[in-house]
Image (cartoon, rainbow, N blue to C red; front, side, top):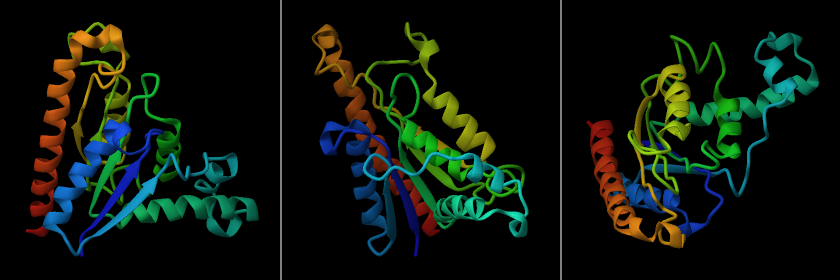
Length: 216
């Protein structure tokens, strides 16, 4: 049975969130291919994971039989998240841009699952696992735009998910999502609509292609 780990981090609910809406389209297409498959949904906005502590971090550098009770408890929380990631055949992450970067809840999850000697490095336990990131944003930070230099979502996730964890990373980028709500961006609404339509199409297509690839 194929397992998809779905991570949401938008603070907005349902259709109010572009990353959640596009993720829903991905999931619909995925379930069509894997009606008996398993989807594990972790909503980091509704149920944030603990930020990594000194005990949780240091436990990863300490032999198991030398850990304090505090270290053991904190490390147990990290292991639970790591094992959930390791069991996934594919991962879907909603990563809306918050103040030019990822939501702090997603950063906390990444801090917990990135463990040198296990999930990171040449022998990463999640190496090659396909991960699709829906990186929505209120404006546009594409190459050539005035705010190109403020794009810290893709750069950061490419470094962590792609180069550090060794996952097979792909992005879907719905942009200009604030255009319908911000009068100053009214002239950009057609571009927003085109971007949104393209994101939904990409989500359905990539979900189907990924599902077929994993089933082969």
